[in-house]
Amino acid sequence: MNECMTESGLGPEDCQLNAVCSPAGWSVDIFMQHQEGLHWHTYLCGWQTRAQAEAAAAVACISDWLIECSIVQAWNPEGTEIALAISE
Image (cartoon, rainbow, N blue to C red; front, side, top):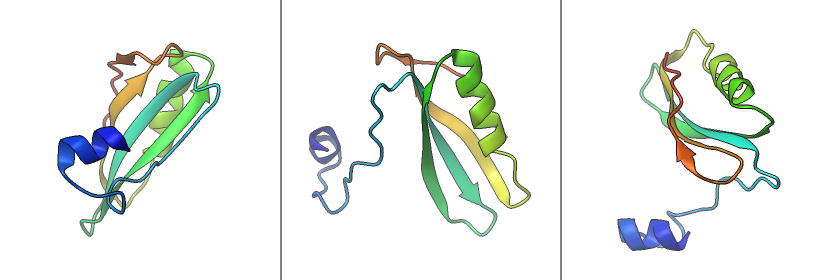
């Protein structure tokens, strides 16, 4: 929250805590955009392996109404951001 408000200049009403996992395991932040233009982020967390996190993201992106679906952030169990590749 503090990082969001500091970087964006927005208040707490625009910077909300979206997900908390404990233990976090392998975790991903997926950007999804509906064909009508609405977009949002979905968080998947607690996966035991990188392969599981990637597979979960791939399943989450299966949709006839999404025009974009991709991992925008991913973290390993230690909380280090890493690169994962899934894009639909």
